[in-house]
Length: 256
Image (cartoon, rainbow, N blue to C red; front, side):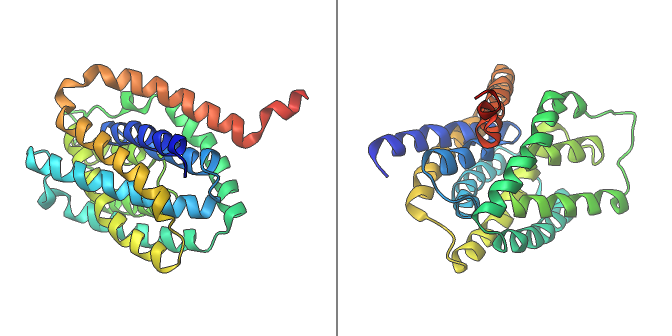
């Protein structure tokens, strides 16, 4: 990695950390940097991406807990369900080669982009007139989300928040706290699993980890004063996902 790549990694990681703390989708940025800027094969990019995700989520979770925005006791069963699902997902991820992951990532961008266009935050305002949904409904959903998170991570945050707020009736900030705790806990084990499979490129992961950890800390510490940032982060993310889709589907070839 040269100086330019390191600078891009630090800046990209910083913005990814902010996005993850606000809602999610930060891994779209980091995976694109790994694969399209640094030229890392898809399956290794997916594994290495967990280094910066772990760094960011650990610091963000600690900051949330310190500021009283993370209640482990109320979220322990949610965290358990997501963790168990993530172990299934990471096993699936270790079975893919570079082309397999690249293809999976490319087609998963489509529902992610549509979900972003739907602006799911308008669906995640708790309704005080509705009761908490039965655990028999929510726990299987959290387990399935865990599988997705263990497999690819990108987009897990917003999907999790939709269920946590709409069905489990967390407010957005406390739901974010539980989400970040989930990512930090399963992320630690996933990094070990990928490392044992020899899939992590630590030099590349360290640069993004530093940037993402700083971004997560800044966002979580200033959450209450960053209301306006949500709108700008949302549109930035729309543009980023759109450009990544153009790159992965090589749309320009249709006109050549």
